[in-house]
Length: 81
Image 1 (cartoon, rainbow, N blue to C red):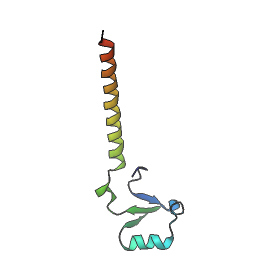
Image 2 (cartoon, rainbow, N blue to C red):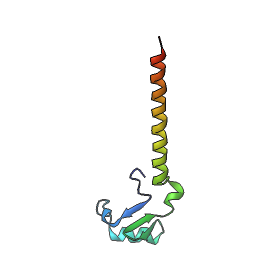
Image 3 (cartoon, rainbow, N blue to C red):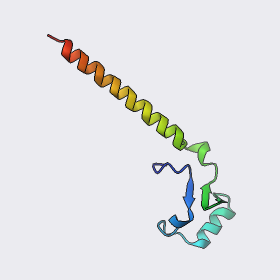
C-alpha cells in the first residue's frame, strides 16, 4: 500500500519479490491475483485498501491542517506580550 500502486504488480517486479512463474500461476488460479496488461492486480485490492488518489488527498489535507496549525501557533506567539 505504501507504494501507491493500487494493488498492481508489474511483471518486472516478480524477480525483485523472489517470485516464480509457478507461484504466480497458483495465485491467479486461486483468485488472489488477476492477470492484467503488464502484470497482475491483487483481487479486490480497493475493497480493503485506500486508493492512491485517496491517500494523496488525505496527505494533502493533513499537510494543509498542519500548515494552518503552525500559522495559528505563530500568530499566538507573536500576540503574546
